[in-house]
Structure formats: C-alpha cells, structure tokens
Image (cartoon, rainbow, N blue to C red):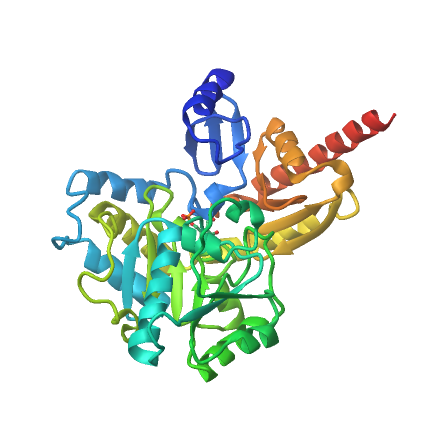
Length: 408
Ligand SMILES: Cc1ncc(COP(=O)(O)O)c(C=O)c1O
C-alpha cells in the first residue's frame, strides 16, 4: 500500500520535496498512523504548523461549527468572524491591526510591501529606492521576491531574474546590520531564531541591539515568527525571550491550527494604515473559516498553557538530547520544544538518520546537512519525549553499526 501510494505521488505530484516514505492516513495529538496501520510519533509537527496537536478537539470543533455557517465571502463583504479574529490577534501581539493572509510566504511578501509603502509614504524614501536588510542563511518562503534574498543556492538557481532591494548581512552581527542601513533602508527582516538554518539562537545581546538600531535609524524591525512564534519556543513569540518588540510580526503556520492556511502581518496603525483599498489583497485572506479557527488558536495561546508546556517539556527534551552528545550527537541548540541536533557526519546525513528514526516510529526531518530538527506538537508528554529520544539513541546505534559493517 505504501509503495502504491508513493508511486501515484511520484507520477502526478511535482518533485519539489523529498519526503520520507511514510504515507499518513490519520492522525491524533502527537501520533500519525500510516496506510499500513503503523503509528509514528510526530516530532516535526508540520514545521510547527501543528503546535496544538493533530486534530486538536477545540480547533476541530470550531472548524466543524464554522463549516456549517459560512466559509468564504472574500473581502468584498464583511464576515462576522474577521473582526473578532483581528481584534484578538492584535491584542495577543500588543499591536493595533492585522492584515490577514494565507501562507507564510504571503505574510512575508505582504510585510515587505507594507515596509516599502511605509518607506514611501512615511519615511519619504524616493520611489523605487527602498532597501531592506536581511540575514544570511535566512528562510522566509519560496516566492520570487523571497528567494531573491535567500543565500541558499538550491532555492535560487534557475529562478532569476530576481527582485532588487535587499542587502544581506551575517545573522548575529549587529555591527554589520548597522553598517548596511542607509537613508533608503525601510526595514530589517529577521527570523529571531533561524529555523531552517538549523535552529540558530543568536547571542543574548543581538536582538536588543537590532531593536535599538532600528529605532535610532527610523527603520522598521520585522520579526518573521512564522516558525518560531505561537508558543514553539516556550514564549508566545521568540522575541519575548529578549524582551524585544518588533514593529511588525509576521505569523503563519500554527495560527491556522494545523487546519487552514492562515497567516498575518501584525503592526500598529501608523504602519499598517499605509494600505488603502485596492493596494493589496487576497481572495481567501481572512476568510471566515480560517478566522474562526485563528480566533480559537489565539484564545488558546492567551491562556499561556502551551507556552508553559513548551518551556518545561523543552528543558526535558534538551536535557535528554544533550545526554547523547558524544554518542553520535555533536551539539544541541534551540529553545522550548524546538531543538536542532547536529549529528556526527561520520554516521550519515540528517536524511539517513531521519529514515532510521522513521523505521523506529519517530518522524523528524533534517534541516541542513547533518542537522535534525525536533519540533513535536506542544501536547507531547514527558514519557513520549523519553520514548522518542530512546528511539533516537537506538537509531544512532543503527547508523553506527551500518557504518562499521561498511568499513569492515
Ligand atoms: C520563518 C519562516 N518564514 C516563512 C515561511 C514560509 O511559510 P509557508 O511555507 O507557509 O509559505 C517558513 C516556512 O517554513 C518559515 O519557516
């Protein structure tokens, strides 16, 4: 059954991913069941889109109820769901307004447009001269403008010509960031913790410095919290760890509760107010189904329970993973239930280890080269973490015995 399902994917779905050979057919909480009836502990959570667990009952109840009411009117009309969602999300972020979109990449694109418009209308940057400072090894999505400032050749190669107006500086180097800013800089766009780069946590003074520089130089600080935000790191936003409040939050993934694509640009009225009718939009952005789900997600986050779980269980996960240093693990990084684990390259690539772990019933994915990402749904229990890490230790042993067999 697995092979047949994969064969159909291979034939008809574009080959822009390299998935593990697991064919999901149902899921609940932290567990995914495949078409063979095998169960897997999901330690990826759809790249943090499933922070609240698969088919979280509160979220699916909202979805069911909204399916029976109204799902889409487009922004040509109002719905009774959009306003309450925007109000709740703005309050969670401590900001005035929300621009609802769908995918994460759309939120990033929209954030870039808002920053450029703010530059033109408020800062007085001459038409077509705006620039935005970004970080090396960033990951913000896959559109042409976004890959224009990627430093990953595989994300760019063959996709030119690219969008101009971006300046790249090393992540973590506030001095280089300050030097890259000029009178036409409208924004600094950063992931507070770089996710796809391997869960790279910056030094404690970095984001506070970036905040100061942006304020001093009248530049918008845009935090892409699409993967790091919404309780993943043990706080509502990763920026909270350093007491930093950006001018613009970009949110996505978990905002849609693992049910709907729902993303948002969140900022104060003096920033988002630069958009007027006809200047930006999306047919599905802010649709009633997504907005209802988003409102439930925000209410779940407002209670703080998921942030606490992530912080407490994250400590446990990190401690257990650090225990494997010297046994095939070279290093462990991250915050909350978000860990980047560097594997000894002698044991194989991250992909090899993901395959071995899948055989043992744990689903993770490699980020770059030899780094594995552990990002389970935040509803995972301590026992489940222990079981996953035990399987990981065993998979490292499997990898070691395979390399020993080969060298014999
Ligand atoms: C930090 C960050 N920004 C943006 C995106 C793009 O989101 P999407 O895949 O929903 O377009 C991602 C996806 O992994 C991400 O991690």
